[in-house]
Image (cartoon, rainbow, N blue to C red; front, side, top):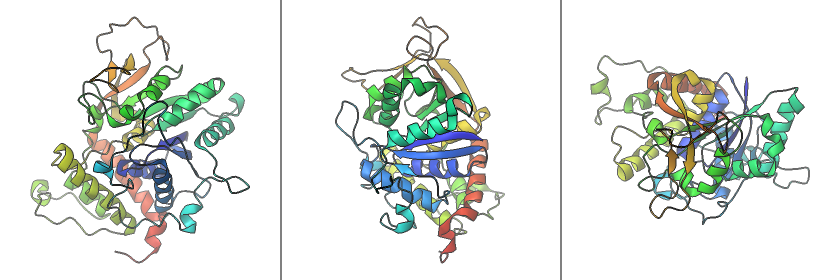
Length: 367
């Protein structure tokens, strides 16, 4: 079992990453931290707790509220893609104020919130046990403000980190500027701090996440546990063909996540075949790295460019002289360049099947 700490800003695709982290057979989720990004940190905290409940998280897992803004820059959100509260159009989740959701929020003995940094540090220390336990993989699917603060304030604890895996960046490609991806653009200084840490770092860029398209065929698989591949996929998956009726409540909820995301990606970016599920690829990489083709490069973040702030500068041609270490002087990042798309979706659907039996949503009246 791979111990994982997950830092998120839910966000539709973050929600699917939480589901996959909970139901991947070789991942042990230690805890979750929220961060500003797709929406405010208050909303991302509530959304993460609602997702833990919906997807049947064990009761010991908690959400720790993280950074409300970047290290240096003004905060930015993305309601155009995710709606005002980060989970626009999603149906079936319990209300944030409900006792079952509130139970997933980290609080101390006096009922006060336990911050992200405290939760992360405790989980890593208790798992590492000064070398007698396991190292922890830290996954980020949002801006890396919390991770940068951990790196900066607890350098002696980096020995207990197996790797930092983040969804973000692009190789010559952006989605919120000509060259910058949203997560990195939100807090570029934080990303550079993490890249300079003496720990293996893995980047899952949008060049690869744009391959993981939730097509109508995959959407049909998601909705129905009994769906079989039709003889004529093209005919079935035409816009005029109805999708299968959801098998249960949690599949209905997951379907509404994909549907809203599909609409915003179509209107904003012109994705007509379906939306890319960016964030669960971080979980897939940790669970099954053999699904990815990766190459190690020197990666830095542009911090001052008039037109290029937030760009992940990947040194494809080895212009910079580097040693073999991770961090500030070395080839500091393993960059994903390819993906076995079919195998990823098979992995994802297996997790949905496990979620079917764990979700409390399925104890309620079916849709």
